[in-house]
Structures are given as structure tokens and as C-alpha cells.
Amino acid sequence: MIVVRRMLLAASVVQGRITERQLPLAERSFPGISRFYEGLRDKPATFLQLLWAFEGRKYAQPVRRKPR
Image 1 (cartoon, rainbow, N blue to C red):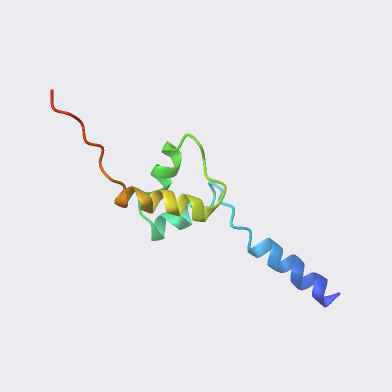
Image 2: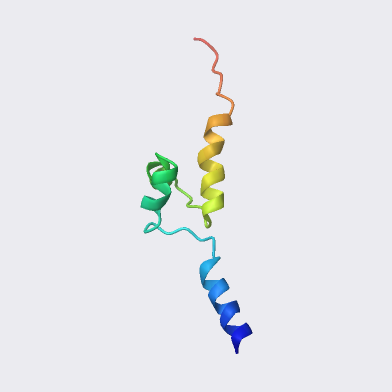
């Protein structure tokens, strides 16, 4: 019984899914992440995916356009 209870507790704590209710907490650590999330057409399933996309913006190469 104790083992089953521990497994259920662990399963409820470690989900990794992000919901809009959790965004204010994420916003405290990553300012601007809520606005970034709202602007995404395809929403990430997990917080880690959201964080990778949010942080990846800093390292993306700028698109160079030919002068007219």
C-alpha cells in the first residue's frame, strides 16, 4: 500500500505539463514567457519545450534580407 501511494504521489507531482494557470509562476523566473506563450500558434505540451523555445530566441540567427 505504501509503495502504491508513493507512486501515485510522484505521478501527480512530476507531470511536466504546462497550463495557463502556471504561467504567472513561470513569469516570475522568466519575464516575458507568458506573452511569448500567448503568441505561439502551436502550444508546447511541456514546460521544458516552452522554455527551450523561449530561450532559443536569444540564440537564433537573424534573417538577412537583401537590400532593395
